[in-house]
Image 1 (cartoon, rainbow, N blue to C red):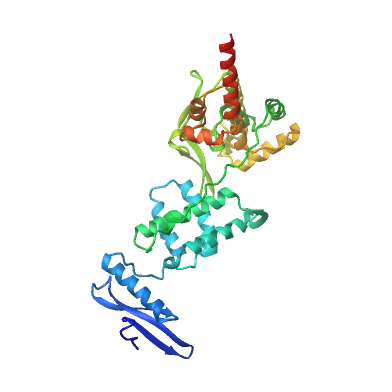
Image 2: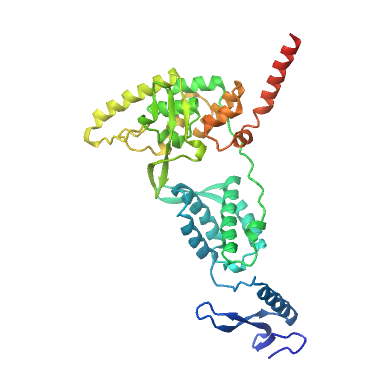
Length: 394
């Protein structure tokens, strides 16, 4: 039953549960191109229904109207990630999929059209309370620790990207992905090995099969994936240069070596000295002996730091050796990435300029280096000021 002149276009429905209101508009059928009547209901009063009716008509007149669909957020994310796979590296796609798991678990069943800013706020709050789960011994185990600030930030960033695309493709009436603001995740504090600790650590590491990989981490600042993907053909012993052109990546639960690096700047030359060359030559002799011992079982992949059968090394094996050596040396454990962090910090403290350090690390920009190592910069400024004072005084 129509509501008369006061609320034109609004109709009343009576049933056993009481009264409700709906409005009807004429829309174009995308299949036939013909006009059809579309009903939108569930309103508790005619005023609200009429307000929505007028808003919808205005959007139609401006060409901004988007017909609601039953597409869920999960279904949209499936479509979005499938399209992304055409232009993004497998590792990045895997990272996106890992974040999408958190999204789908919490709000995947929500209809895309019904997602609001409040949905994002509530989901953000849920993520902050969620525990990290790891896959261990063929089952998922709750670590009883909250998701890191970085994981929460990256998950919301993926959701924002998917929602922005939904708006661009005409699936959402509002650009809530772009308007929902995120505070950038704070840089997690990292441990820096002191010079004395580095010496003790390297002494304890001598004789360990992982010594070469660990030594390269401390003395070149290479990423773990770059070291484990390094080929002998990437090293110019005459010019004393390592060329970073590939890295280890996990794709479909298998460790493989792929050309390319984390960033465009990651493809770079890294200068080495005689001490590094000695370690590399010792590593080459070790591999030659393993080839002879392994015989037909050995797979020659040209890797500098492979398994004892020549295949790409699972990083978890390297980390186990790393932590065992720290225990042996009596030094608190740090991650492999913190070996790289220690290398960069000591370069800066030794007076190496930020641009050179940034290039050696393969950062995408000097700004990245400044953001990560800002804790070192004040000390460098004081040292520079002291040097200037002495020159003026003399």
